[in-house]
Every structure is written in C-alpha cells, then in structure tokens.
Image (cartoon, rainbow, N blue to C red; front, top):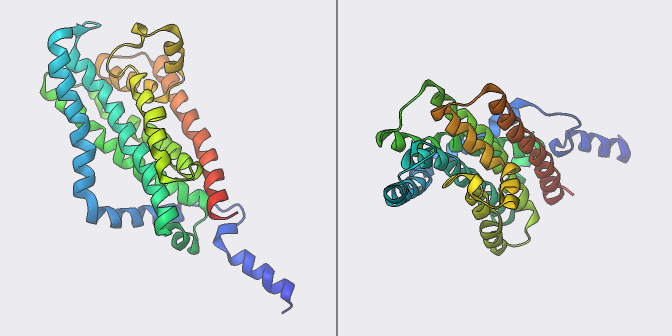
Length: 273
C-alpha cells in the first residue's frame, strides 16, 4: 500500500472527519456516559439545582407577595412560581453548558477521549446539550410544585411544562457550550454571568410583567427566549391560545437551532482545527 493510500484509509477511519455521519447511536453513547457520571454526583447537583430557585420563590413570593398582593388577577406567588420555572431551567442548563464544558475541554481533556471513539463534534455537542436539557426539564418543575403547594391550581396542561423546559434548556445549554468555546479564560465566566445571564432572567417577565418596563426593554424581552418560556409555562397554568403558544415555541426552536449550528462550529474550531 502506498503512502497516499495509507493516509486515505487513516482519514476515513478517523471518526472526527466521518463525512455526513450524524447518527443517534453516538449521541446515545454520550448520554450513557453522562448518566454514569451523574449517578456518582447527582446529590449535590440536584440540591443546588432545586434549592436555589425554590428559595427565590419563597423569599420573593412571601416577601414581595405580602406587599404586591396580586398581578393580573393572580396571586403574586402563583405569578412568580410559574415564572421561576423558566429561571430554574436557565440556571440548570446555562451554567453546566458554560462551565462544565469549558473545564472538560480545557483542563480535563475529556473530549479528546470521546472523539477517539466513533463520535464526531456534532454528536458530541448534541449529546452534551441534550443531557443537560433533560435535567433542566426535570429540575425546572420544582418551583411549580412548590407554587402548587402554596395554592396554585394544578391543570392538565402543566404536564407539558417538562417538555417546554427540555426545549428551552436545550437552547440555553447550547448557548453555554458556544460561549465556553469563545471565552479564552475561565475568569471570563464572570462577564457572562453578570452581562448576559442576569439580564436574561430579569427581562423575561419572571418577577413582574414586562409592560412595566421601558419600551426598549420590552423590545429586548420579545427576542429573549426565556421570556417565551415564561409565557408558555404561565400559559399552562392560566391558559393561552394555540397560536400564541405556537409562536412562543417557534421562537425557542429557532433559537435552539441557531445556537446549535454556532456551538458545533466553534467547538469544531476548538477541538479539531
């Protein structure tokens, strides 16, 4: 075999350059790896993912609720409980996507081992984001259950909340992965938290209706995927029309698709190029 033929065979066998192959089996492999890791670390992860948003709900709901009373005809803690679901999804997806991915790529070099298997960057990114999204969809339900305990009337439509959480969490996990491939240092995470994550949940209608904000902030909220998650979750509790619901879903889906492409591109540049 000539040197050229040998090189060709080597490139064909390299899973990182596998042409056109986007399969579910490698994604399932990434999910199985994450499940194995999660079984050893689930307790602290679950504690922080559930307790923090529930504390927000209790502190603001019982404190501000006594002063505000009701918003839009609903008790403030019911209004807040449905809004904080989206915030819990944001925290449970964005932080792991940003910090865990950066640490695994930069310090632990975990992805080099994964990519040595028949997994390409698209499947790796998709599997990582999907695992994070599945957790976010489950953890995001905790504030809703607490709000139900405080008097929020349960509805059958609330069974859709985990699916809304998974779709939204998928988008924000990918955004975290994208940013982890952009920032040059772990210290830059502080800029992301203060400059992006905090405004995202403050301008999303979580704590108060966005019509109380200036017009420029209302316009910003409309392009904020978290706002559309809040509206969908709140709609399962208080009712929402089909067309508005489909509109909110479309915005979140477009956001997830866009950041998927960008995250794959940037991670490919970091891991392969």
